Length: 191
Image (cartoon, rainbow, N blue to C red; front, side, top):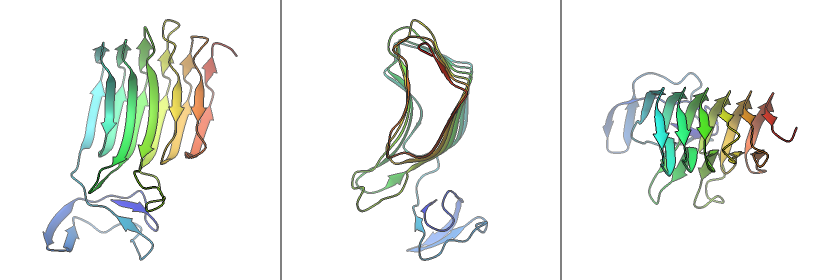
């Protein structure tokens, strides 16, 4: 995965490795150069999570750590802490969350929030996003749910569009450290 620099946002599968020499399954569309930061991680992704009901859960993690090309759509959450998209850094590796999409999900009862974030342990050593290219469309937070939508942390290129927060306490927040966040055609109860 090219995490930052030239070619950022691209990933390929490893075809072979010998020591520190790695071969990928096909060339990058935009080849990395000396500005590129590359991380090699296990592939977790290409997953569809469709039409499920989650109850009394803490986090519903559509992506935690390495998650690539995940679609989470038409799901119902009841009394859950959050619908979470979370790229993170461990002591020894980066676990990016890229290209995770949420469509037509509904949050009911309690304080269930939608969160997209990236957690970097040493931001000075790694000043780039670990969570990229997330889409939240047409989420409904019902009037019995006081949760919000928050985008923050080491995150880049997020769309929050057509979402409805029907409880008066619900709000949509884009924190200053998140980059390239587009908020469009969303409604809250206090508008």
